[in-house]
Image (cartoon, rainbow, N blue to C red; front, side, top):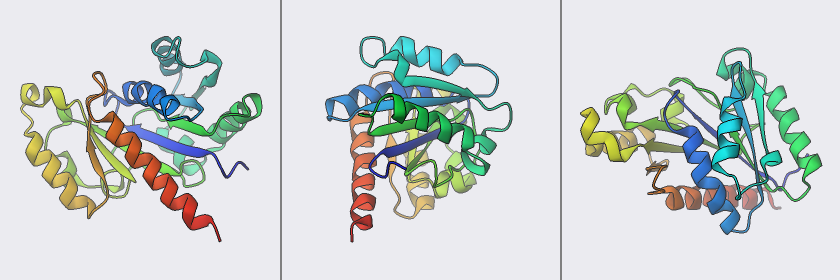
Length: 211
């Protein structure tokens, strides 16, 4: 077990922008002096892994991006029995001993979505504005209990009849102080703040483990 490795889980509905968010986070993590690797989850394909390798060409060794095919509900592979993801992460750590940050991107999930604490130290759930500003009010553990809630695609809110101010205010209200971050993964807006939040949470938890 590599207790010094930061494990970040990123979940959200299909199309929420999870892969784009990972692609935006990885170069920032590298710039911060970290050494990331990525495990993607698809139900029956390796499409997200292939897409990430293309997006991160020249930034991250493509061998540091691996895909797993869950063959079932996304909840099973990251919450109920994360064995396939744990094995993929362990293989990356064995192959690349310098890796200190593992990102697990899950295939789409609904508002009941959560990560097993065995798999993710910091769980991020991604909403996007096209889901509508009522989504945070529907609650569910993905919204209320994730370590960080991201509202992505803030640039299109006005075009999909979403009141971003309402969505932002409701998200903060139902999360009772847990962080909410606004992002545009394609331009990078808000991603630095998200990274700082993730690293701060990790630092607090790592510090709490020190006797």
